[in-house]
Length: 634
Image (tube, rainbow, N blue to C red; front, top):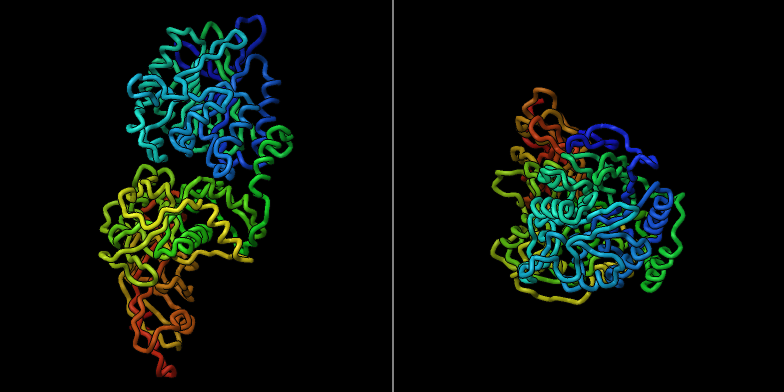
């Protein structure tokens, strides 16, 4: 596979150097692109610097320049509940791109709002494969293609979106709106061929809001190599310009962090060479004053810079954390939802927590919260049976064996309050959601529960099976507003991980122990065959209320078939102090281990679980050995 500096010989890119000397009949066309501005649109930080960088690279170019976007520019961002699309569009109008593509977040404000987005934009939005079902043309407010003639070079630009990503990440019923989403791997090459044969363009640029993997599929499907460049958005990857199956593919990560620059040598009506790079948007690049003014004026209108609370622990809004595991910030958000709705359970989708940043410890501003919850989602409470609650939670599990899991790792894909459960991220298991407790009590499959969610989820967003469930209350209160109000009522917050969602890859045999506050509790388990070693510092015993006691000693060696765990009896007794003499308290033991079978992507190790049947003895505390299970024989 060839990288920057390919030239065309016999229709295929081979290595060479991209030059554009005057008089040799060639022209160097510079293509600048950005994608997924999203949360950066509400901050006077990288976005104004990106505007300056674009102008600098325009001025430095040795030939004509074309500027394009890869979609997802107008949302989500901290100002979207107030300004909606207007703040980013106002800034992009200063940039003056030649075209952008409709991404899934352009639909954040509804289908009808797309016309307003495009009407306020002083540049075209392309939707080549999102067509009016009756006319076959791009749907109202968008264009099928844009031809740019500059410096003697003609560039055809098309905009493509992936059906699965577009429908899965929006609440739009495209069929009801009279829009057909065509296969981008068919529409893209066909339109590129038409542009070259009928419009005689020198180069075709596809703005593909599809992610890199689908962009590579597009390049492969373009058998005639009519698509010269694929500018990618959606999956927010750092992907410097690279030749793939005859097309140059590039993605500039996201949130105005990078600018993609590709120099195309145009000679004889075709691309004969290229060179490219991703340029980082750094603090030594001056902010464009107009862009800064636009953003700050909007921020001042909603008081985003006001400090609302002190966080004693980090508020982790990163994608990696919130998609894969429980976070303290996810707990805070869902606690606020459940408190406001007076519900039994609260759930929020991980994709609704944005910014991919960590805030605090320290002062937290309103803008910080708006950055992390930028969608105009409102609070909705639905009624679910216990069985439906399990189905709802299970709908979000991504298994390690799935295509997504192999790429990003297994995911729980949600944050919760009022409910605790184990999740098993593997195919072929009896239950992917199990041991569910609501309000500290075992789940009643036939019982009914009030569950607070956001309006996106309630309408079936992210695949949640909630659109036909009874609605207890549908408020007009924005999710971000209720979280801000929840924080304003507190001087400090210190959210932590409480064991609400416990990942389990393997089960150990059960054990029985007695707790009386004396001595040590020792439990012995048969280890699964794939256990190679156990990380001793991860072994802990958890109560149904989310308290836990770390193991004092763990014994497991190479070739062992048993795992022995010792816990301080007094510490364990303190965690279940509400239990009476003779009570049986279910405990769970969890431990991380190196597996010979599972090759994890996100997590460092696999995770074991064992149910521990515990009998509490409050009398006879002086009796020796009462804190032991059957002797392990070692």
